[in-house]
Length: 342
Image (cartoon, rainbow, N blue to C red; front, side, top):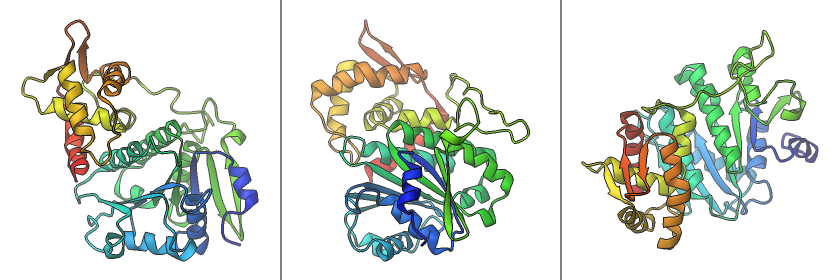
């Protein structure tokens, strides 16, 4: 038996982030992946598949081999291969219900993170849960510094936990140093590992690491090496956590798109409401709503969040919103805006 058994599923429980440790070329890896993506039923969840080493058609083929032709409610494939995903997507392109995002060859780790965040944000108002697969961490480590990958994973897992996205990330233990595995394990709610002919599961509740299972552990002391996340300062640094939090919501992205393109960097609140209202319906990832609802969400949620991170200044008395230029953030906003506009 190679798939996720009832006993394994029970051990996983409601963990939102999983590290799937299995040889990448094994049947166990593929069956476990599709079992995790189809929690409930094949058509019930929204599915995001991030592929770093194989083409989209390969991902679709694995689904069809182990699940069948029944596709999930909503599906998106993020093709993040180093070659820019120029080939291997003919079958996926012929399936209208699958959204395909192909990252450019010069995309970096934060570009990948914001692409995933934008897709998560697009489905936050749907009733179905979202399942996320990232295959694989081995490829990320071969491209980027290990600490950058750890920061990426930590931020993405925090985002998934906040939005109740059920995510699993693949790692091949035969191609990953044990020291790196030791860094990765504490970043997840649970670790599902292939051992012999079965699976072992370790969860956050079983970890002795304090205060959080998701913090990077110093193998020498057993203590967390990240007792706290330092607060963001202006100008905004390349912070995975902050950037993902800012761009995950389509309304916040529209606000930032509009402000960064204004020479004067300022807009009245009423005009901003009208801009968001006109652009949200046209955005493929937007969440339509009445003008009144948009105004309330801007006033009580989005503008305060942007002001907290020092990206904007909201003058309630003058009812104006001013943008604080930030080249680090703008580079990724321009990338995201291209994706949003298709």
